[in-house]
Amino acid sequence: MARLSLVVGVILIVIGLGGYVASGYASVTALIPAAIGALIALLGVLARQDHLRKHAMHAAMGLALIGIVGTVTGLVAVLAAIASNSVGDVGLAPMSKALTATVLIGYLALGVRSFVHARGQERRRGDDRRNGPDDRRSGDDRRFMN
Image (cartoon, rainbow, N blue to C red):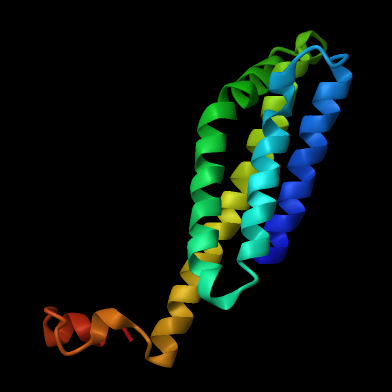
């Protein structure tokens, strides 16, 4: 996931810089995807250290979720324009938001998949802290957890 975070960060930086240049350097807010991308890339670099991996990836997923909430309106606008066959009328801001939301949705989906996979690996290795001596589940419930 650390490598994916770096790739997603670079893609978002390109989207942000591209939007800023395409706007004729008029709108600084076009750089918001680049800022999100820089933070995700930084968290990806931090995630290469074993003791920071979980925290950095959870922070990156939280940032991705916040980014999705902030950009989903652009995705809805672009999808509505596609449905009404008027894509040429979509402005630069909704297009940039739509690209950002699409990248972040894919990143979040892959991140959740990775978390589920890692949790399964912990259980298979026996590192699952929930199945310790203080686990309050009945024997029947515990049997299905392994």
